[in-house]
Image (cartoon, rainbow, N blue to C red; front, side, top):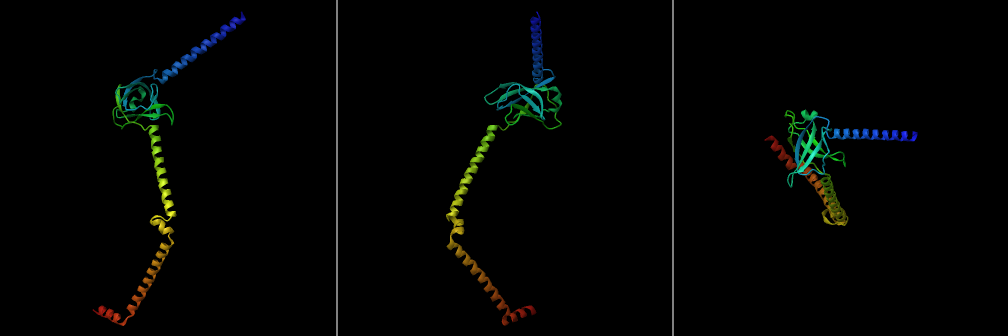
Length: 223
């Protein structure tokens, strides 16, 4: 008899706990889906939703304000996304707001990000359609990184060829740095220029001391 009573008690606790967990699960799911708060519906059109799914969050100013209610492909290049938004956020979201697809972290779930519009606009009405902006996907970022890496590799290869040509004395720069005959000729030319400048200075000094030139200079001054 005692064993049967103990089993009934344990079974009753198990049933009660299961019901409580079920109610809590319904509450959190309903809260996530905005089932227990006043809401309104808006929509937006995308050309690519980048893996967005029904039930994903809608975020505004960093705060979760709703969820994705429905996704429908309306043509071969456009997708309509319906959103359920908490009515408390209606006064902050204006008609010129913009929706874009983002990620919750670097590799997190996709979500809708509503970008605030200019102030002074009227607030959204139920079933309004807001504009969308296509976001940059991870594939596009990786492709751009690959292009940049390939370009850097090409530049590195070209630079290696140039340095090798300089070492081998090829090209004008290579000859300037490696060709000893060319370097000696250049040194000799500089020495000659220096000597020529010195000789010109001496000639000018001698000319200034010449009696005839000094007389001509005095005559010019007297005039």
